[in-house]
Amino acid sequence: MNDSRIVNGFEANFNQFPYIVFVYIDLKTTGEACAGTLISPNVIVTAAHCLYDQNQKVFPASDIFISAGSRYNIEQNNNIYSASKLVPYPKYNPRTAANDIGLIFLKTNVSGANVRPAQIYNQNVEDSLPAAAAGWGVTSNSPNAQISPVLMTVPLNISSSPQCANLNPSWKGNNKGSICTLNQNGQDTCYGDSGGPLVYTGSTDRPILGVTSIGNAPGNPERPPCGSVGGTAYYTNVLYYIDWVSETSGISKDTLLYSGSTPATPSASSSNSIFSNIKLSLIAGVALLLIHNLF
Image (cartoon, rainbow, N blue to C red; front, side, top):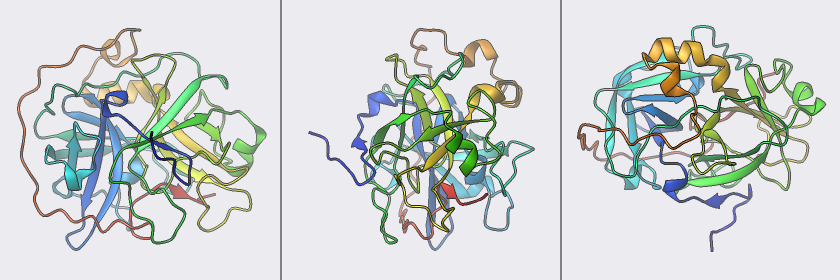
């Protein structure tokens, strides 16, 4: 039986999210973490804010390492890849987190029999749509909480409640730039889950709906607790940015968009480079995480 966490998530099987990757930002003395989603063997979609340092400069690609093909985080997974290029959306706004989407290009293709790229859900996002998120974020609201060693997932309630706009004035509806979820039963993404996928769970193919971006809670606290009553989270709507994703990645929209069947596993070149001695000093206070209270 899977362990329940304080944000009411559960341990995930990797085959539920065969496209998820762990994104590690090497800061030399410590590290920061996000997640991302493979949309081809060498292209990852993630949150734009994961690609910027504290001075709002894009990290050098040489600082980014990706682990793939495992439910374990990068400390326990030696299937590691180097980034060749980082491309945040040109109109990303770090103050409001509008347009919070970006791409990571890898030097080599991700390999692995259990790995496949995601496709993008291509229908309207309705409140009744079954959805879940996944990531390796913290599983506690403790200020010293560490990222999860194993992949976690949580079912989420997509909502167009007035609370979505109350807590994020830049939210304009779930078929615009971001998708809102309203916390129920304490279920929520948390710090460290940034960039990971929000997926449609009404199909075993699990096409992606969004990219984990920001969250907030009533009262706009400096550090909103995850899963708070009346709290909301926001996921960049990938379909809304499909033209940019396709043009920037060089992947056709026909390939990117969900076809209703499982995408074929690509023939990927082998890449088993190991970035050794990674130490994840990833506590909630230092990790590059779900940005809260930006509004």
